Image 1 (cartoon, rainbow, N blue to C red):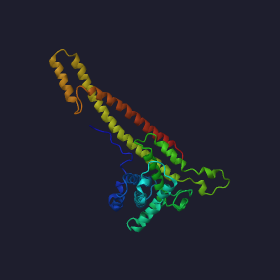
Image 2: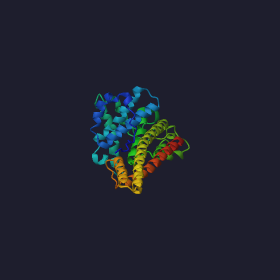
Image 3: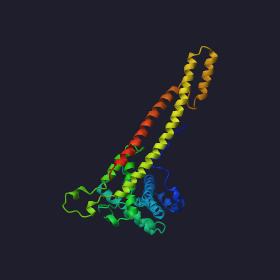
Image 4: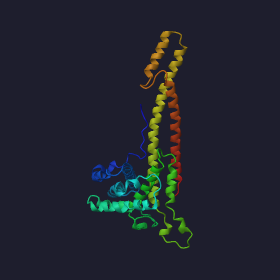
Length: 312
């Protein structure tokens, strides 16, 4: 039986750069991370790569930024598992330990000649344009571009994971939350004189606007996945409705030979997991699934409309 297949992030991303060869060593290093951190790192690399493409950044930097994305959380190898996997909010003491993953990741990269070129992603991906980030409280142009890109991708995937999105329906709410991070800190707004940095938010507006384009691509990918299953459902409904027509004709037939003719026709049309007794239930389920998928397609197109109207 055909099943609907959909990954939250489009699978069309890194292959054009032949990164399988370039990143073999780096990916082996990622294998030491816990599953969730490794998956998050892969997602961030995916997003960073595609953001670079939309920014029309050259291929060399795109590959570099992608690998930085893969390795940005490598320092979490040294964070105690009970802190890394804690479901609730971290205490102040635990948060201070968690923050060390940036410097620990940087130190790990600097000690390894193959990882050293990508140390900046590990160190700077939690820095903020307004200076409120860590570990060094850098501001604006002092923060490398790769770290600014990774920060946006990192925050987006973290929210997606926390909210357990299985579809892009309502994804615009996450993007609205990220928009808030492009605004100046409210505690500075009451002051008469603001420095240039205090007029900044935490994340790069241009990078966030570019992320919107990537997200729209992912929504279109999801729509194509749903449409594929939608078409399958229509085919199955058409087949089951033909069985229903045969049943009606069989019940109206007077001759036993004619009844058997329609009965055999019904059996030929049944799928392996269907029977004369349950096909009507299956038909009802397919019809409901069709309605559900149509609503999802409509909702996804509506998300695209909402995202295109968002102002950063």
